Amino acid sequence: MARTPLRSDLLEQITARVLDGRLAAGARVNEVHLARELGVSRTPLREALIGLADRGLLVAAPGRGFLVPPFDPDEARRLYPLVAELEALALRWTSPLELAGLPDALDAVADEMTAVLARGGDLSEVDDRWHGLLLSRCPNPHLLRLIAQTKPLLKRYESCYFGGAGRAGESIGEHRRIAAALRDGDLDTAAAVLVRNWVKALAYLGKDDDDHRAPE
Image (cartoon, rainbow, N blue to C red; front, side, top):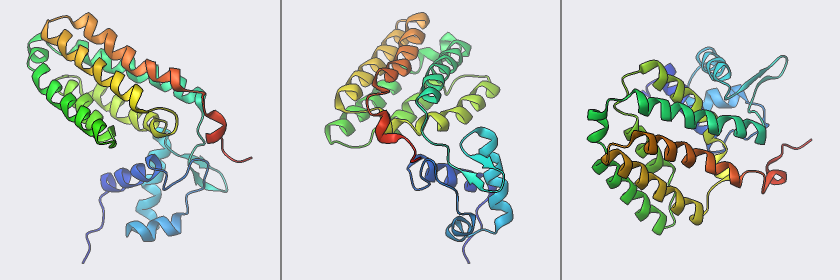
């Protein structure tokens, strides 16, 4: 007998469908179809959908159920600087001694990113690991929870607006400069480059806005 997904599993599986476009931007969530696909009843599914609406990943529309929000460039312009400052704050919460032990491991993950880029692969999973490692010594669970809840809102825009080999290579270089600054004990530079790494993505925003507008 197949195991019924836990609530955390449901949240993760529905989030993945929003991020990869299986639940398309601007579309209504078909609860009957999704419940059957996930192997759950409507009650736990609705609880999970309400939770994701509370986080902003879905919208609860009276009389229509739940909708995936359309892509909104203004939302991206708000989210990228927010995540940048939250991650920089998490870095500042971390003790210098803990940070000093990270650069070699960060560089190893950056090496993986370079290899994936050379193969033309998807960097998102490796990039997530790099940022997770960077913040892994932060002792503030409330801050880390806020980052974890905010990032999925941002990641919807990654594949739609940003990317390309040029930007990816530049981003890997910034990752290496962050590790080098931490190796030198220069937290200010590391935090500044981290913020720049996130915010630079906004330069790519708006080039193809018309391609990602929801149908009227």
